[in-house]
Image (cartoon, rainbow, N blue to C red; front, side):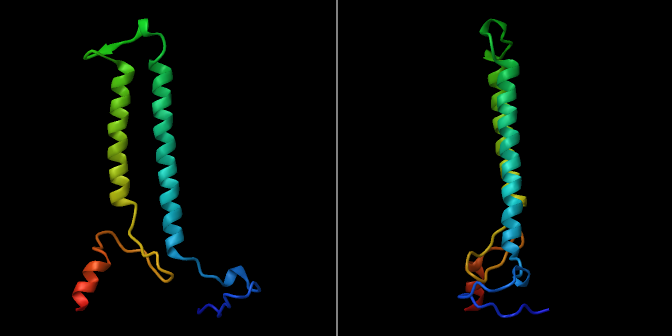
Length: 118
């Protein structure tokens, strides 16, 4: 079903006649995954400090470091790995031109397609 012509200068149109852009769906998905990841990271870091931080006389030491610092380092390393996984498997390349599209994973970009057209 073709969408009716919409006059860009007019504000007299039905919102149902506007087809949603697939890029908005993808960026919304990426936003929520990023926000959830960030909130989990902050909760882990803060929870770790509240549980294992506190009075220095009660610290547990591992390899000369207080346990809470060691756990912070482990959480940071896990977060970096999580971000790399999200960037490689969730985020997708997309055009930002008015009629752009979302490219599948493994797409090499516009530069490669321009070379093959020559």
